[in-house]
Image 1: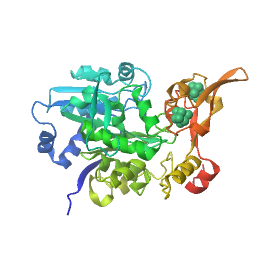
Image 2: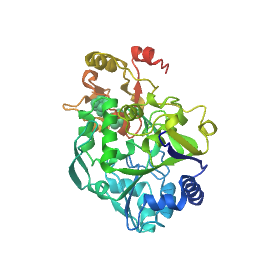
Image 3: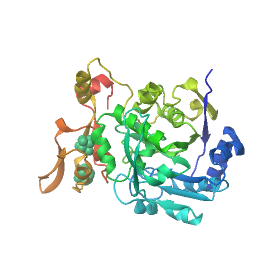
Length: 390
Ligand code: SF4
Ligand code: SF4
């Protein structure tokens, strides 16, 4: 029988550095203790920490990996490596500003951890890819010996959920992310691309910050949700499988990333492929977590029918007019050419209008609106087929 992937599911009820450090040490103990860590980080290894810095956000924001969890991780990893750095490339704005505003750079400075803004890239070919062979990737992420990802547990309009696998999208430097959205206009192909990306950068370990997660209109404009949870493990898909079951996708295959991982045998996804150590999902599961999208994948014999129905069923980005400040960022981040969004003048106010027939539903506009003025809404047919009554 195939060996199960081990995942530590831990309870931690506040952002207190000492408490988080204690919890993480218990997690590593469950996974194999000092021996496990020495195998993960061999002597002299260069370690890169990859937090989620989606945009420029203040310290306590549930959008980004919390700086106190980041500090607790460094305290443990520095016992095994003196060559630690961290980096990310946000979806919008400057990486250094995002690292400063979130408090991560101040913590890093305290421990001599270097910052890499992921501006230098390499062109690499991935020979045994599922879908994507040719890559431009952050040099620091490709050249590190050990990559430890520190994702935030959040809902996501396109991928339903973002966690351990999706977090490495930040290894694609700056505006090149938009190109991937245009090339992979549906969630399933986008998720195949994410799996290839993780094969390329060889993500070694995940520590998922779910102490305060994000529910609803994620990954940037949802609501904070106290989950008191940290999930850690070597298998990114196993960590994500535990996380999605925790928030309410009882069948992990209802989320595109885990469906694609399962279909391509990329990693452990199903409950019987994973051994959960520490807490149980039943004990930790909130009863009222607000999902971004309901589960369920639609496949039809003809790709044309599938694409047509996807367009009819997929939710639309929809403006909450009274929140909009007319900044035009949604238009700026739209990856399509020509832009799907135009800024129009209505009653003396500049507001966005969508040409929906050309929209690929990447939800970059919803993700990066600075004031949460865009939400996702199903069409009537979408509501019926998805049985989503919102
Ligand atoms: S919807 Fe958001 S991003 Fe677009 S113009 Fe309004 S405030 Fe700016
Ligand atoms: S309008 Fe929004 S969802 Fe549609 S393609 Fe542009 S950024 Fe993506």
